[in-house]
Amino acid sequence: MRRSYHPWPDLIEQLVELRAVDNSDWLKTAAIFLVVVDHLGYFFIADAAWWSVVGRLAAPLFFFMLGYAETRTVPLRWIWLGGILTLLDSSNTGWTWVAPNILFSLAFIRVARPYVKTFMQHHGWAAFALLVSALFAVLPIVANIVDYGAEGWLWALLGLCQRMYVDGTAKSSATPATAMMQNLGLLRLLACLVAAVVYVWQEQIVFSFSQIQLAAVILGIGVLSLCLCLFQRGPSRIQPPEFIASALRYTGRHTLEIYAVQLAGSELIVKLLPHLAP
Image (tube, rainbow, N blue to C red; front, top):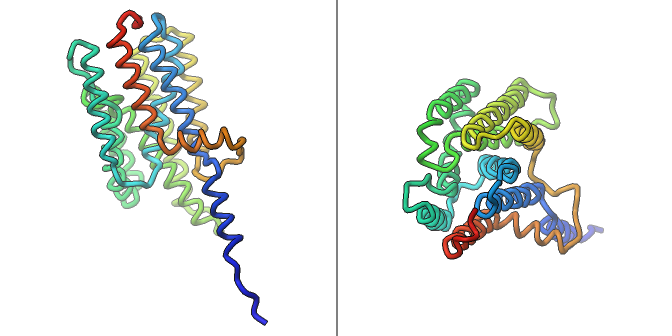
């Protein structure tokens, strides 16, 4: 007698996975926390060097996640939110030129990512060397064109390399490691090293941290880099209580909108209440 198939267990399992906190939710929530610390120091604290030290860990997370994600669509709200944030920033600096908001850079990464991935899949190390050399060459030019410029794009390149490595590992999990997988592993480690070194170098030029502050930045970026090289999307091993999990899931799905609202609020507060600015 044939046993009837009941889809309920599979459906329940899928629903549980949808409700589970993903590793990316933790990473994106950390990015929001760090950027809030950075903006509080920038807008409201007179001596904010240490706030900036902590805030240096935020941008790499945003860029890494854009490089890691497979999504190709650029939401229109990124463009108009980026425009509003850029205008607010310029208005608070006497309508001088400011680098367009990071949302424009993230939109560019999302458009360029499929082409960069195809380029690297076809040409491997040669493509990687060419991309890194080009990004290094345009560092001083792009810095004034988009927020964080090419140093941010290097973190996105790390995100792409990490995704290619993770996907390749999953496909070849039943077979011995191939030369291609070994190359992807080395490539993503080199991308991490380049992104970390260039980022610390460029941020030190901007902020002129003291020796102990610079050491803290280097340590923080080092730990962050290690975490990013171990990152892969999927249900987190740590599943917090539902009231925390729901907040994490919401932040993970609306990260850039939360970032935009928080930054716009800070810009408006110092514009309307200038005595609060340092």
